Length: 213
Image 1 (cartoon, rainbow, N blue to C red):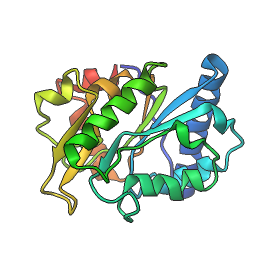
Image 2 (tube, helix red, strand yellow):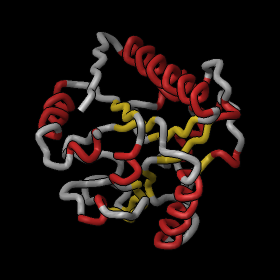
Image 3 (cartoon, rainbow, N blue to C red):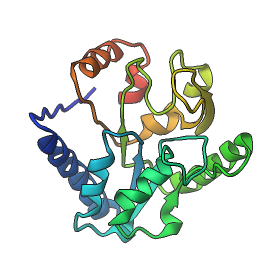
Image 4 (tube, helix red, strand yellow):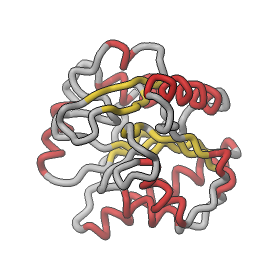
């Protein structure tokens, strides 16, 4: 596995390094392919990163964005990842609406999963995800794939319905390891010694190779 670590000594440096990494990746993909496919995770850690990224002078018309996972709540809810992206990245970056791929959480959950899988299949028929951003929970979860991840998370499906008792929003829509693992670059945003320990534990997991290949 080719893993490159960037250590930051302050919150500002953390944001700057993250934005630089994402900007360079997007520019490279646009130059090479004419278009970039960017998968984004939610959470409080990446929020200021997305705001700063949206202010970068990029050809946003040549970028498509999809959500790595979403909470099954109204898209206008403060805890919605779609709402997060719209109020950070998209408050500054002018990406055409047709190039934004979010789960429609106004649907019942199973139709929501099916529709999102269809939308992602259409998007990914144009190429693999070029970059995905990821976090890492204290329990070792990425996206909304909570351990122990069922076999479906490593199967042929692109999207699945998951549940958790750890957080207030129990029902989630998550991309699977097929999507995450296929990305050209996976960028993890991790803060604190606790996350470092969880990362090291994850790297010893038998399924780490699938995600990090």
